Amino acid sequence: MSGAERRPSVAALMIGRGGSSFRDKNILPVLGVPLLLWSASAARRSRHVTRFYCSSDCPRILETAAIAGYAPIARPAELATATAQSTDAVRHAFARMEQDGPIDILVVQHANVGTISEAQIDACIDLLIANPQATAVVPAHQRPDYHPMRAKRLTADGSLSPFVEEAGTVSANRQDLPTAYFFDHSFWVLRGRRAVFDPQGQAPWPCMGSRILPYETQGCHDVHDAADLETTAKWLIDNRIERPDFSGRKAA
Image 1 (cartoon, one colour):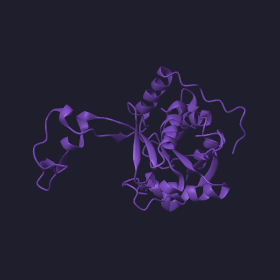
Image 2: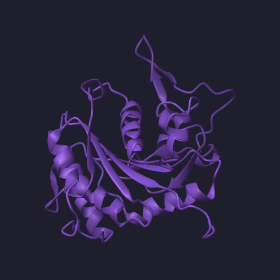
Image 3: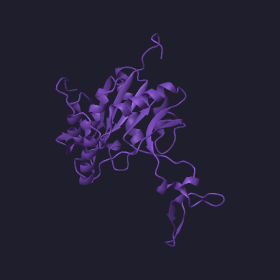
Image 4: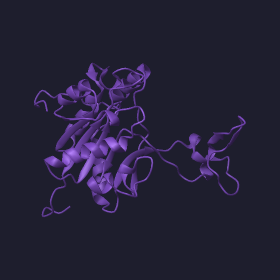
């Protein structure tokens, strides 16, 4: 990007529901810090992100995110059910965020994931900027042992059949199978309105748009139980992630 070009407007959106079988998972302490603040801290250290928001139905999540300067967006009840779609929550929040100014790139953060670094966020943003035809860059990992072509479907009679119907023989050797990626769901980097409201967006997360690039990782550790909190803490220590410090920032 030349010095004469306008610097893209980059905003972060933290999303998280209050309801969960693991109560308050998004704000439980990890190394003494509420879980979602680890992700918020990474976004705050990004060299690209300049605006910060949090969408939730839970006042405690919104209050915790505000410690990091994330402006609250109260999520409607219909977008906070167990069956609500994350794309609808992102679209609702994005429309509100645009009232504060245009957004060229949106970084969607998941409140139950703390295994994120600013280096990962910035690398994904850089990749999106370098590829103007892409609608999104999403951290993703390979899991050859769980390749889709190996998956089985449970049939009505209780037996298993191939989940993916494939012409010909599927090799039992992992190296013979086409590369398959699985999204981390730690964060997504989206090309603003073009991706978020893309009518051809790929299911099941159409807000990513129709041309998604992978940023390869070893996977993330999203939190669904107490053991996941311990795994997150170990990752943060092993990767020497800077402890969140928002003392110099005002609450949203």
